[in-house]
Structures are given as structure tokens and as C-alpha cells.
Image (cartoon, rainbow, N blue to C red; front, side, top):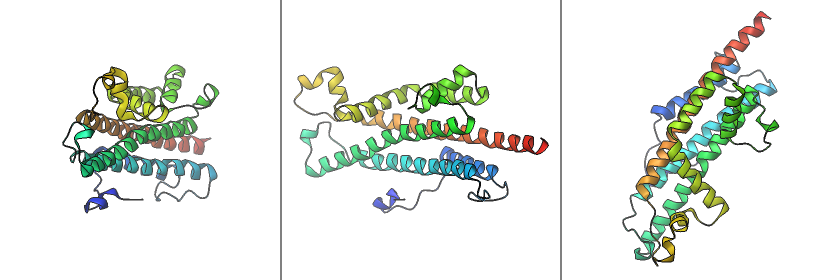
Length: 246
């Protein structure tokens, strides 16, 4: 995996805080579904366990890619000093375009990671969201769990996290949808406000708010991962004990 910190001649990131907790929860889950004393990958060749572990470890990669995209966008954000693109020289425009590249990559990856988590939950917990909606998102899985009163402890905590970060996620979702289905997300504010009809300058969007929102999304993602995999690890242990008694 490309370590973006190398682009800035910086050492590899040291995991800590919620990022470390999420990764530890995933690794612990992988140990629980196989031999609890083993490392990930020691699951005796069971195809179902191999698939569950593959999805779980893939979420660590997705989390890494999201965090690195946020980090790189923030490095380039600090190089942007002007509020209008037309006032920038060539170097400043390159910095702005590079910032946009990594920031767009970050907000797209937020929802990609969450949808992958939703798929894992749907499969591991047997939610069967596909019976209601063949192409479903993480938030569709949450709704199904809530309406079916399925795994209520987990469902309630994930809903609490969704509500806690709802405002930031709503803005990011709007940016993601505009970027994917319309023109470029940086034209979003002009499109909504009509400012572009009167102002010949292409204004730089609110970079401070963007950074706040994407950090909120990262916190929501890491907290959700920790919650899901801690819960599923406990469930795995209880299921194994139940199977041994039966």
C-alpha cells in the first residue's frame, strides 16, 4: 500500500487513539472466529471463516486509505492561501487541484468504507437486507436492524453514532453525490446559491469546514468499526460455546 507520508518525507504513522482501537477490534475478531490463540489467517481452512476474515481485514485497508487521503488533503490545504482560483499562480493552482484530489478521494472513501462494513454486518449477522433492497448501503442495513429489532444492543449504539455525526455526514454525502452524479463537487455551493451567476471568480470552498467534516466522518467510521467488531467478537465466542454444548 502506498504510504502517502513518504510523499512529504515523513515517517510512517504510529497508530493511536480511535484508529488503533478500530484496527485492534478487527484483528481480535479475526482471532476469535478461528483459534483464539492464533493470528489472523489461522482458521483451519474453513471457507466461511476465510471469507469473514477477508472482509474484516479488507476493512483495515479501507480505513488506512481513508486516513491517508485525509492526511494528504490536509497537507495541501495549508498551501492554499487565496480565496479565488483566478487569483492563483500556476503553483498555487496545482496545490489546489492536488488538495481537491485527495479531499474528494477521502469523502468518497468514507461511504465506501461504511458500505463495506454494512455488507459485512448483513452477512455475518444474517440481516438479509438484500430481500428488501438488492443494492443496499450501510444506512439501509442500520434501518433494517432497527425496524426488525435485530441485535438491539448493537443497533442502538450504531444509530447513536450515526446521529452524533449526522450533520457532517449529510454535508459529505451531498458533496459525494454531486461529485459522482453531477459536475465537480467544488461547484456545489455555486449551484445551490446561484452565486456563480453573478460572480465571475471561482471561489475556493470552505476548507476549514471541509476538514472538520472529514475528521468527524473518520471518527464516526473508526467508532463504528470498533463497535461492530467488538460486538461480533463477543458473539463469536458465545456461538462457539453454544455449539460445544449442543
